[in-house]
Length: 113
Image (cartoon, rainbow, N blue to C red; front, side, top):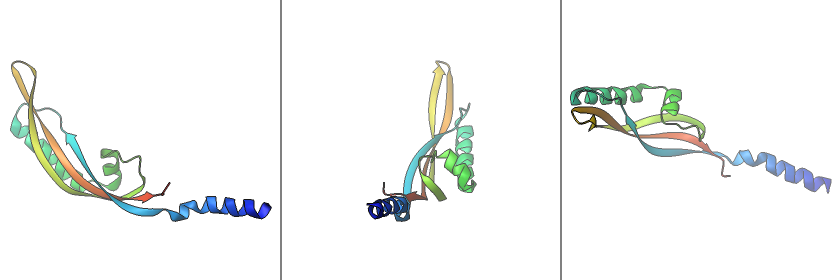
């Protein structure tokens, strides 16, 4: 009986050996602050897109909220697309904001749970 318990405990403890790395592809949408002109919003959108491409892995992990994944690494921004949205809080004041659509991928550990 002791041998059986030892074998079962060993198998349970080595479950993490079966973990492997997978590459996950994601899409996200980020929104800038509001601006008085469309051109300011477009500039802000492209500034954000350029910043994403140069951010570190830890900055991108926070930006894309990847806290639910294990051992995230090699985050790569694949594609960005900037568009603007016109909106109004009051009748006489039109504002603009940029919407940045981002495609990215990263490696994470899959535990096969």
